[in-house]
Length: 127
Image (tube, rainbow, N blue to C red; front, side, top):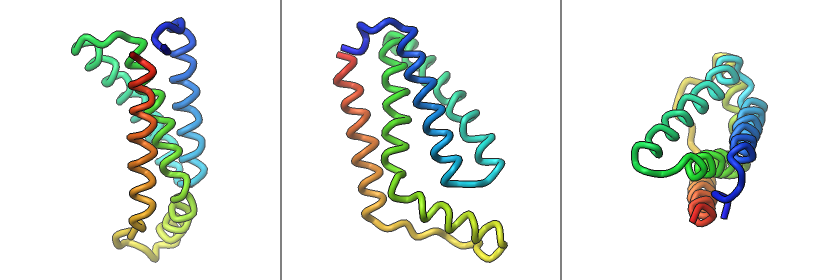
């Protein structure tokens, strides 16, 4: 279904989902290094994903849909954890926190359900 859309629109979807994910996570984790590194890592990872998909016989449209769905699922799945991100980054900035962060199990389950659910929906839309 989505693979019949012109490739230009899928590139726009990929850019928009990357920008939205970067802006949202950048506001939740207010560290300058993260704001610079996260979009760069995601773009390099996306280029790698497209390369691997092309080697495995998937066309460009399917790879772009899956890349966009991964960003959408990632952002949705991390929504409940935004307050936790801010608290931890403030403690790190003050120098008072260096231990492990205990993420509640419900946040982990919500993240996994969102990410896998959106990826499955994206996979179904590419067929």
